[in-house]
Amino acid sequence: MQAVYHEGVQSLEGIKFGEVEQDKMGDDEVIVKLKTAGLNHRDLFIPNRHGENDPPIVLGSDGAGVVDQIGANVTNVKVGDEVIINPSLGWEKNSAVPPEGFEITGFPFNGTFAEYITIPQENAVAKPEHLNWEEAGVLALSAMTAYRAMFTRGQLKAGQTVLIPGATGGAGTYLLQFAKAAGATVYVTSRSEEKRQEALKLGADKALDSEADWGEQLGGEKVDLVIESVGAATFNQSLDQLKRGGTLVAFGASAGDTVDFDLRKFFYGQFNLLGSTMASTEELHEMIDFIEKHNIKPVMDKTFKLEDYKEAFDYLENAGMMGKIAFTL
Figure 1 (spheres, helix red, strand yellow):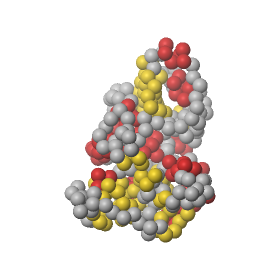
Figure 2: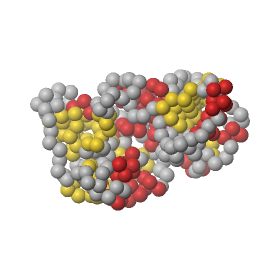
Figure 3: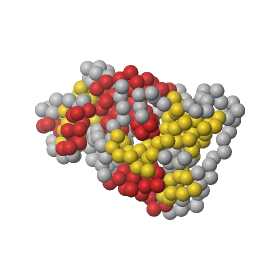
Figure 4: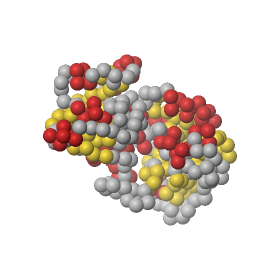
């Protein structure tokens, strides 16, 4: 089958497009013929983690397609079903942390940037009917991550105020829409005036300039919850915007892993600092119910053909997209 895969040198230079062998199917597995696949920043990191002497690995964690074959023990789907790929492998029920053995599609197992993918039957999930193929193909990883961070960990309630730094990427646009649907007041930040205007159109109550003083722009107002995925570049500003007793949930660090902060200010403020990553299959289904109820759709930025992978990866790395990027197959 044709695929975008990584092999050899540990960098983006090791990404290639060509023929790879399709994984064999077990009795409890299904083969999905993919129609679309979604790019995530995770796809930029995997080539640096995949060993140069390891076998080729197909990249990609998000996708949607049609069930092509089913194993002898498969009961939850049938050939011809339209499905999305659940990228959460081995984490079925919502729990405090993922169980031992939890993995994500695309590493260390083959992912979605290919004509076909072989997955456990529970990882083939019915495609939400209100989404087109491009929207369905970019949904799961970012949206389930955002859902767990905001609701399972952050416990967002109607009437609360939430701040989402950098809310114009894939996960950020989900967070914004989720919070508004839940009845919260939503503030976002972005360096781009154009993206701030887009965020306001999506429902943000205020869109702050990331590079100006956030406290001044909020007029001294504090928030109940911050969902932080930027990292070192924004962490202390995020912490400064919390009400006493407020909560900061961190699930990403795209702008730096290591932060220094004032511990005395932290404990006097009675703040809560929580980590989050990915989500369980149970939370994925909760998220799908939520977006169907509220008619929430992914914000689409750009779509590429699979063979144009170099352009797609460059766009993902450098363009600062608004929403999600998809491959079509």
